[in-house]
Amino acid sequence: MTHSSSAHGTFDTLERDLTEIFGGRLQSLVRYGSKAALLHTLAVVDSLTAADLAACAARVAAWHDEHLATPLVLPATELQQSLDVFPFELSAIIADHVVLSGRNPFAGLRVEPSDLRWACEVQARSHLLHLREGYIEARGRDDALSVLIVNSAPAWASLQENIGRLEHKTAVTDEVTRLVGVKEISNEEASRIFPKYLQDAERLTQYVDGWTAK
Image 1 (cartoon, one colour):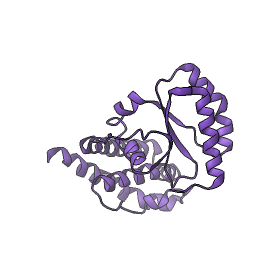
Image 2 (spheres, one colour):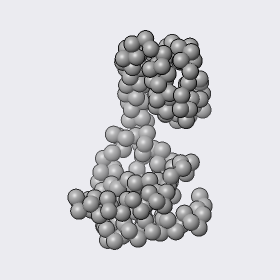
Image 3 (cartoon, one colour):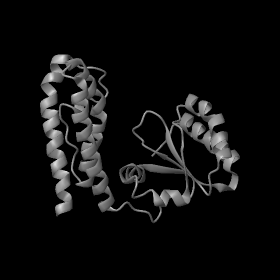
Image 4 (tube, helix red, strand yellow):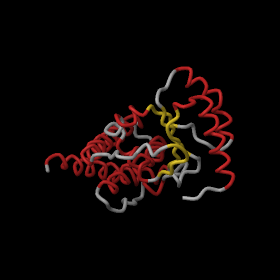
């Protein structure tokens, strides 16, 4: 992956700041999420203290001014221990990252498929419960239903992407995933979309629940 000269300068500034904070405890600095609008980074360190967090907090406004997302800072031991807790997040970083400085923190690490399946089942079940609860709270108001659909669309798209990644297939694109980035829809559209949306969420949950029976 190539970076513009301005991005290089931004990363150099971030590396310098982190080196001032952590010194020799900074093991690696990695950029990930090449398609994201902001520049996302992961800093792997030997140890992390409250004083380190305070020092980062003092610099975060300047980092944001440079279009840097707040860096994800992890002690090396926690990175390895987090593979089964955040399997989709870390597998996405592993699949799309560039080491900016230090060693590759992912060398020898892998996310287990069983952890990905479990996370996907939890995500699907949680989404279904969220839709059902949201529908009840909408109290039959289509305007509230439209907000529920729009606000839940990114999570629905993420679930589809995770299933696609796990099964090595292209993520499903449907009427709800196309709403990602849309700020609002009409009440009539919400009333039309929701019944199938809920049905699809129920079917998808049943599908991923079936993985454990295989």
